[in-house]
Length: 134
Image (cartoon, rainbow, N blue to C red; front, side, top):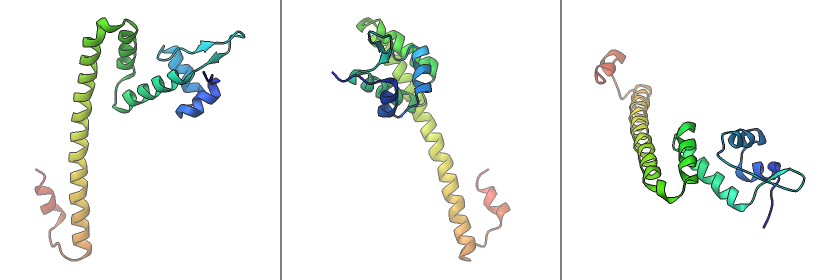
C-alpha cells in the first residue's frame, strides 16, 4: 500500500500541510506514524479527506464535522444520529441555495433592466423599478 508523506498527501487532496495539521489537531484525520515517528497517510485517508471536504463544501460547520467524526468513531450504533446530523445540514444547505437563487434572480432582473436602458427599450425610472421589489 502506498504511503504518502504529509507534503504528498497535501498535494493529492489539494490542501496545505498547515491545514492538514489543523485537521489533525481537530482529530478529523489521524495519520499513521512510521518507525521514525514521521506521519504518513494511505489511500483510505485520501478517500476520507475527500468526504470531509464534501461535508465542508455543504457549509457544514467545523463543530458539526467534529461531531460527525466522533459519532463515526463510535460505530454503527450512531448511524441514526449521523443520518440526522447530515439531514439537518442538507436542510440548511438547501435553504441557503434557495436564498442564493433568489438573490441571483434579483441580479438577473437588474442586469436585464440595465440592458433595456442601454438599448433604449426600457423607459422606467430607477424609482419605478424599485417599487417592484416592495
